Amino acid sequence: MSGDCTRCSVHLSHGGYVKLIVGLGNPGPRYLLSRHNAGFLAVDVLAREENIGIKTVRFDSLFGRGSISGVPVILAKPQTFMNLSGAAVEKLVRFFKIDIEDVIVIHDDLDLSQGDVRVKISGGDAGHKGLRSVIDHLASSEFVRIRVGIGKPSEKEMVEGYVLERFSEDELKLLPDITAKAFNAVIEVVSSGAHAAMNKFNVRETNNSGKEV
Image (cartoon, rainbow, N blue to C red):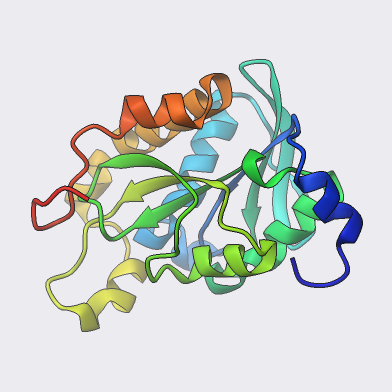
């Protein structure tokens, strides 16, 4: 982590109890239904279904506390904009003394077909600047990711515009099912562990060319 976090680093190496569930996205009405906000949308579903109010504004985040399957959780939506998400996540981790392995990050993923949801532990950022920021600020990639597939445009040069675009009308029709899958993946991680969730959700993972990844 950036800054002086010696005490925090010692704590983070030992395994904890409270889960920090972070959805990545951009704040504001302009980005509300953009593909890049898949993480925000999934956290909103978690908050609604688990009756957790996300109303506290602090640590560059909008967050709330509650429980899922009897496990204490913090649901958070960084308000720093996507590329600086890690600054908010680090503040939450430091203040609440969350262990790295108890951080669950929900994010959009260009390498998965639209509607696919997969669970992953650690790894690189795959070009996702929000993930890169989280990894840099936590000085670790050993957190859990819930990958929400949004597909990708035909040309690489179109990616930035594509992720910031609003979901198409056809995609919006599928959105409730997609966020429900992400919700169920988080519930499985919290209640049964990341490995159990991977065994359940990571069947037939493919990229947009139809190849397994």
